[in-house]
Image 1 (tube, rainbow, N blue to C red):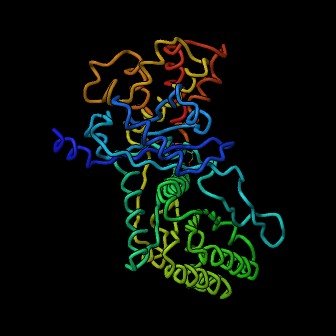
Image 2: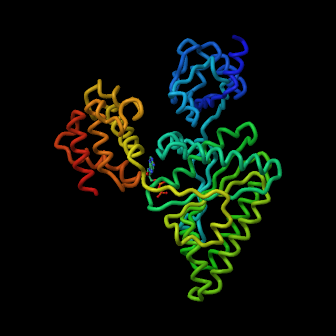
Image 3: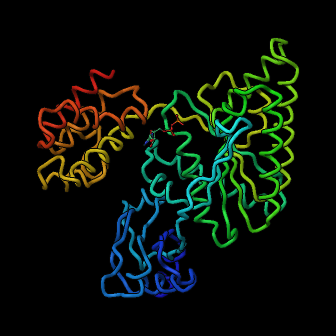
Length: 410
Ligand code: ADP
């Protein structure tokens, strides 16, 4: 038995512990307290939040949320975690409430980049709210973790690239959520994490002489950040296609030669950053074809994220409807339980016949929403609600309204 026990415990599970903003306790103390608490419990938990034990005043005073995190193994484990089977890896963190520090461009109007201390309050729960094909998020997380390890060991460093079309598929959110996740998971190695969000479009919508100065200023700032060894820096360049377009136009001679100098300066600066082990560059683009080879070539990881598949559409809609049930805009209560189940547990497209009527109806709506982006799907419940005659209604009526709204949108 002890051998079996040890073997089984060799698989580990990530537990994220979010501290209360008011807590001033040391993270190590909280980590040990949570580990002790987990050791003492032989309960099984699903992926998601675990209640903070009400009989533990220390944990109650300091912890906002304890969360078991998703993993691929998870799926095979039927989403149930038995604590005696696994070794919990506990990450304790406190959210930064500082908000974005905005950097204004030359004329003081257009923000060319935002700066965030991670993990940030604003990105709390973002990772969990994004639904993609099974394994995509975990794959990205593992890639990025490997990249960090590689650079630490002196293997050729990493530039990270995630792209997609059409817009609204969550690529910007995914980059931010990934940075947030990594900042939590790598807390023990990097005591400070920052995200610099550069809007490539605003960087280049100005005259190029101005852009040159902005690029220089931006990278000088990033340089200062990465020089701090204990700091992990994420640089998110959104809408990178505007840079690529500028470069292409310059090459074909239709743009002033100034522009090519600026774009090339940016590429050189990005290359220079590669020698630092503590920086990850994430870029997004709405168009796959327009991405200049100079950018694609530099990327170590590229991900295409298309519109959500039926399972993801169902999940997105389910989470929105569940929120409306939770806030009692939509009734009745027993439905909340039905919707609380994940798709795999309550209904799946293959075995739709055995599902309860509400899940079936929701699945029907999800099927009809083919081609809609994650952003449009998230808006659907609000549009459906606006079309109702009364602000509160039962779930069946609401789902029919949702279906009608979906048809109209499509
Ligand atoms: P993009 O950068 O691709 O234009 P954003 O990251 O700006 O998209 O996402 C827009 C909104 O749509 C966000 O609020 C996000 O939560 C939502 N969204 C998009 N795709 C998904 C998805 N797959 N799962 C959940 N939410 C999504």
